[in-house]
Length: 143
Image (tube, rainbow, N blue to C red; front, top):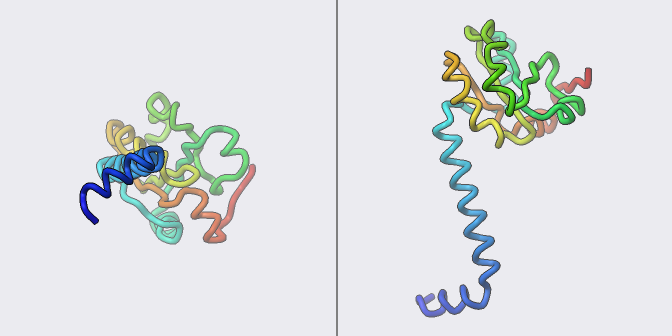
């Protein structure tokens, strides 16, 4: 494919090309943010193992309505917007793994930085969020 045909295609399909570039940019930004967030990613199986072996604590950063709709049993709920002000509520868990999660694993990017500032070293992201947890047929609580 030569350069002239690429220019012609771009001119004929501007909206499609812009949508592709926007999606690609969002994907690259999300991946870079995740890599520099200070979070290690774990899947549902690894998270369960951390919970069983090292008494890991789950941190649900979703909004109130999402949390009430179903969450990991015994998870601590602090919405992401409130985390900077409420991070001290987690101080008693500094010596155990802390596994943060949202619906799909994309909102947890900033959690690592916030918690690192408060002295947390062992922070994880539940890869795929509560959706991956449910897909693995693991328990959900609505209490």
